[in-house]
Length: 264
Length: 365
Image (cartoon, rainbow over the protein chains, first blue to last red):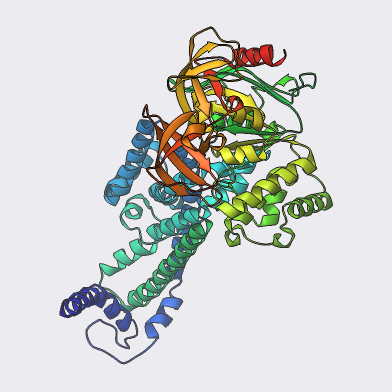
C-alpha cells in the first residue's frame, strides 16, 4: 500500500515537472502585462494581438497547409511502399529495405535538413514551399510505412484468396478488401505524419528560403529578440491543437483495435 | 464409376513440390458432375493442395488439370467456374452479410434487382434470411459458416470446394451442418468436393471418397467399399477402428494368422504370400471359450454410450479391440469369434488397379 502510494506520488511529481513549463506558458498567455515576469491581471490582450498579426496568421495557415499536404502525400507513398514490401517473400531483401527505412527514422533531423539543403543546392532548386514540402514528405514516409506494414502482415491472407476465388481482379481486391482492412493504420500514419510536420523545426529551418516560413521557424526567429507574450498565446493554441490530435489518434486506434479484435 | 459420362474435373499425372518438398506425386483422378466427393486424409497429406489446384490458388509443376474437358492449368483463379468455402470462413469484415454474399454477383455486373434476388435466395438456402444487414462481427461461428457457404454458392459455380469447413464447429452443430450440406448439394445438383481429416464425417456425407496420404491417393471408392475392403494398412487404420495382424495366405480362401488357419473370402494371391489381415472391432464377438476361434483375456473395458470398447489379449500377446453391447469383466478368459466374411486380407504394396482387378477376378466368378 505504502509502496503504491510512493510510486504514484513519484509519477505525479515527474508529470508535474514535465508539464510545469507548459502550464506556465499557458497561464502567462493570459497575462495583462507585457513580459513573463510580473502578473498584470487576467486579459485576452495577447490573443487579440495574435489575431491582428496577419503575418503570423498567414504563417499559421501555411504551416497547416504544409502539414496536411505532406502527410497526405506521405500516407499515399508510404502505403504503396508498404504494399510493395509486403509482396517481398525473401526475408533478407525485406529486412534490408526495413533497415534503410529505420535509419531514416532515427537519423537526426539536422542531418536530414542539411542533406536536403545540399541536394536542393546542387540541383539548383529554389528554396520555398516546394522544397519544404518535399523534405517533409521524405521524413514522413518512413513513419507511415512503419504504421501500415505490420497491419498488412497481420492481415488474413485468405481474405485475398476468397476475393480472387469469387472473381475479383487485383484492382478490386486492393480497393475493396486490402485498403479497408489497413485503413485505420493509414489514418494513424497520416495523423502521426501530420504532427511531425507541424512541429518540425530543424529540417524546415535548413530548406526554407525567403518568403516561406513555418510557425516553429518564425517563433524561433522572433524569440531571439525576446519572447513576446503573443507567442505564448499562439503556443497555447498550438498546444491545444496537439492535445486534440493526440486525443483523436487515441480514439481512432482504440476504435480500430476494438474492431479488429471483434473480427477475430 | 460409370466412365461414359464426361468428367467435370480431371487430374492427369499432376505433381507439385515446394523447395524440394514433394506435396503431390503423380496424382490422377476424375470427378463426375453432381456428386458429393470427399478428400480424406491426415494433415499434410496433400488434400488441401488438390483443392487449391482446382481453384487456381496454386499451379501445378507437372501434369494437366482439365475442367469440362479443357486444360485449365493457365487459367487464373478469378476466371474459374469453381468457388471455395474456406476453413476460417474468410468473410470480409468490412462488409455486411448481404455485401459478402453479393460480392461475386456484383463483380459480374448483374442488374441490382437480380443481385438482390440472388442474395436473398442464397441466404434462404442457408436459413439466414433475417441476417442480411448484420455485421460479420455479430455472427456466431455457425452463422459465419452459413454465410461463407451462401457467398460461394451465389456465384453459381459448377463445382463447390469445401476446405475443412466444419472443423471449427462444435459436435452437435457439425452434425447438423453435415446433413444440411448434403441436402444443399442434392437440391442444387452441383458437384461438391469436401476436404476433411474426419473419417466419420467422410463416411456420413460422401458419394465417393478419395483417401490421401503422403501426397498420393491411397484408395478411392464408395464409403462402404472403402470401409469393407481397405487396400492397405494405412487405409484400414485410418478409416474406422481396426485390428491388423500379419498373416500368410496359404491358398485361395484360406489364411493363417496367430498360428491358426481360417477360412475366408479373399483370393487371387500367390500361395503362401505374406499378407496383413484386418478384423473390425464390431465384427468380433466375445463367446464362451469352447465356442471361440481364439482364446483371449480381457485387459481393459470402457463404456462408450452405445457400446463397450473392450481390449482383449490373446495367448500370443496380440491386442484385439472388440465392440460389445454387453459388459465383460476385466481379467476374464473368454473366446473370440468371427466368421469368414469378417476377415479381410490385404497384400503389401498392391496398387489400386491391381486391387480392383483381383477383386473383380474372383467376385465375378
